[in-house]
Amino acid sequence: MQRRFVQVDVFSAVPFAGNPVAVVLDAEGLTTEEMQAITRWTNLSEATFLLPPTTPEADYRVRIFTQSRELPFAGHPTLGSCHAWLDAGGRPAGDDVVQECGAGLVRLRRDGERLAFAAPPTTRSGSVSEEDLAYVCDVLCLDPSEVVDAAWTDNGPGWVTVLLASSEAVLAVRPRVALDRETDIGLAGFHPSGGEVALEIRGLFTDDQHVLREDPVTGSLNAAVAQWLIASGRAEAPWVAAQGAVLGRAGRVHVSQDADGQVWVGGASTTVVTGTIRA
Image (cartoon, rainbow, N blue to C red; front, side, top):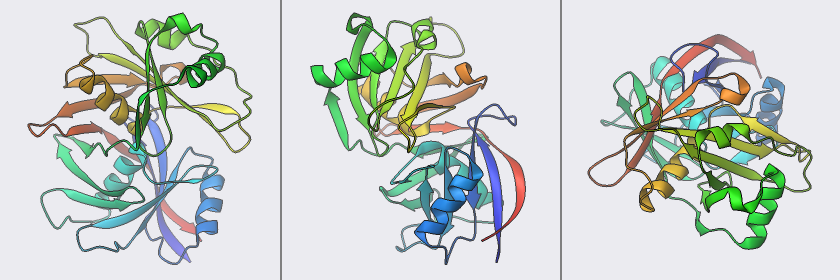
């Protein structure tokens, strides 16, 4: 069966500078095993599969896969899937697009030329134990004294984030690669004030062989980091975060907060590949 298939570059207004996601638009009838196999075949960090919603409150349902597992939520796949759904003729029932995923219902809205999603609540937050921080520092090849602060910023993937003294310190980190357990680490550091970009972000995760890899641009991490930094008084929205420089990318993540305190995370998306996939 031929199914509509696109690849969308997320968090970039031009191709090849953001983070790509593969989207299968007609995924009804595919099994979980088939979705995982397709995701592995794309060799991208994530692929998504659009399905009819199971609740009248949602406009569509999405399942999100990495190379090794299914995720309840992820940021750049959410934006890329919504971009693909709208491009394919999808029309929301209300003012916002409502996406159904493993984490529940996620609202998306247009923010000028960009799409933005409402950051979901974190499933784990708060301080990091000395034991966990020691492990993270060992992975990052950092001395604990170099860490300004650390917190759980888990909204699905499992992030724990360390705040370093500067954006330069974030970009200078060279982590270990071969690990002995599943690990998802965020890095954050502020740029000098007054520039276009306020924050430098890096997202590191392990594959199914426990090899540490770097994600080009990570919406879920930026969302949870924003919630942490705003709640702790370390930052005030709006701001723009940069991510992907170490990989030769130029991702830009736009963070804002509305009058109700809801954090929104957005960015530009660009369709790069359009076609069909036999599945």
